[in-house]
Image (tube, rainbow, N blue to C red; front, side, top):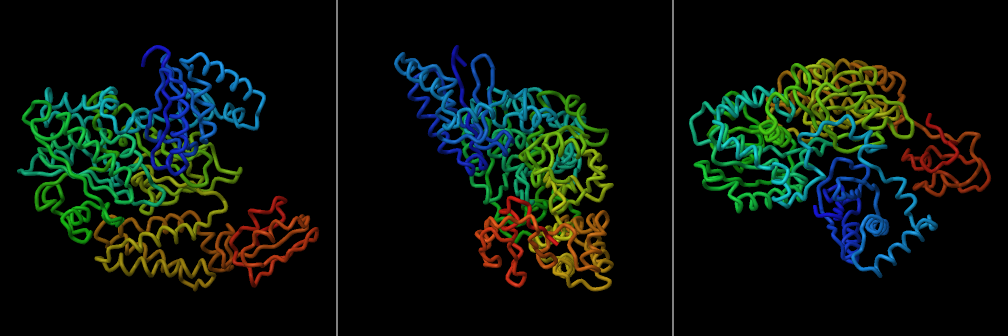
Length: 612
């Protein structure tokens, strides 16, 4: 960056665009053009701070950085005027006058913006980033994802070049084994061991990047593919070199159009630069990549179902062995790794396996990326060292529960995971430690729940998802999950029957033990963990026809208390006319008309409506 230059970064991942980032970029570019100064507006991917989108970061030539969150198009102009020094003297004088006027005109939003500004080392930004250790996300929010030069300026493709010139495939595999990298797609199988198995097979061979991210509340793969596509390509190229493959596929959900577009652009750029294709970097190594879009079936995240989908068949798992590394795509040895696993590989090669192994626990090395969502103040994508506790993630990185509610549990691992209660919040993020609670690491979804969440309803929500996504091949997965869902539906409707809880537990055990693939084997986890840790809620639904959390519409009623002042806000928002409009009088709710939508509860400013 030249002297006096200013780089203004605007995050335009899917979350940034959805939050209104495009008009912000247009306003930044317009103001920067007017300045006619040494400044550039740079489009970057999301840096993980999704709760602050649209997010703008200003970086000066001396390395100083200032972040602005919740930026509007109007505030974008003030950001440029604050940090950029116009070349034209007249423009400079006018901008100076504008800044002075802004100091006395708080209504324009500049004062509020200044309060939200934060150095990365201070305030809420530091709280969010302070305990993170970024390996997979090191480039996210730092580079233009469609600029190969940006990626290479941060040692991009240096790992691939080093391996092709100085390391044999066996040495690459040994490095991954020494690092202790385990698959980040859910099962946690040692990556180096998988590559070693594939290496021993005769060619031709394939490598596949599994970007079929289908967990509710998970967006780890999407963000990385959008913000740092070359990183994933480099990791997949290293996997191909290590295993002896010459063809690779990136299987990405069609619901991720921005990720698909960025990956395809990155492949073209890498081919043009001699980093993919024939005789890569002047060596004998040749490699071709192709993008295939998945149709959205959750079961296609399972390796053999993914392969079937790639072959043009219905995505259904098959019995293993043989495993894909022995007989996979088109009957040939195939190595499948997910996005996060592949994104770790270039870092390991560049920094050495010992640096990666130094992070984490004895059995879970390195870092883990999580999509932090739910009833949390600071949601987004985080990357933390293995061994950090659930409590540290929720209370320190996430800032605690919204609206000062009580922390109840976390649903970790998506629909295949389980619910870990608040009293086990000191459980470390570790494959084995989480398994002891009944949950799994999964791909990295972490949904925070508070006291308003009904655990029976949460189990129903996730089981409804997995039941709908079952391919139907296994009887217990197809029929067993349906019978389980019927029981949960009855409980939430207040129609539970004696023996339902025992039947639910028995069905869960049968589905878990007899299903062919990971979807069926893990589908009962949310039910089993909520039964284990929140059985009192199940019993309240069954025996008392009551929902302790006040979340199941069929089991609750709304009542207006003596605190009502007759402001009529509840009557104004009620969509079914269950509250008569009576100014300055205590209101009443017609229970027969009430649909339990909760709009009156939200609208009441005097906490005069209670759930009973």
